[in-house]
Image 1 (cartoon, rainbow, N blue to C red):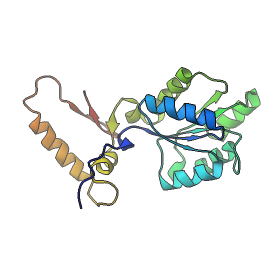
Image 2 (image 1 turned 180 degrees about the vertical axis):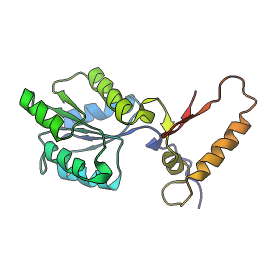
Image 3 (image 1 turned 60 degrees about the vertical axis):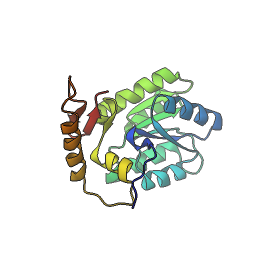
Length: 196
């Protein structure tokens, strides 16, 4: 099988935006992609649960008032499942009452942003949640072994994660003549970072 040589988004943090208002979903996708995130958008709670089962994102931006399954119910179900219990979730909703914010946070949201909002505040909160919950993703371009394997070989080929360590070691030796700090930094319990 040949290696996949296309650039892949798997190397940047992936976000699932669950928003049923088309214009807002488009605005979020455009601005978040501009910030370097890989963004998938869906318009209802049931579709969000299916997408999360198919591919676990690094963070979910979730509207409360959605068709089929409400955002608060999506959040509750994700917190009940072991594989999504720690998935970062930011509620992004027009529900602005204190009791709504408390309910959203108590249900399991990591942050709660009320519409209307500024993109700069949302991206700052997004970075803060990633930094707190998944520190490796907030340090810039930090890649787990699994992300590197998927980016280079794709998911159709079985390759051991130890293979990444071997290749990183070879890259470090090849770059040994480069002056200055090591361009490949090991990030404990996260993976590798490129010091570009």
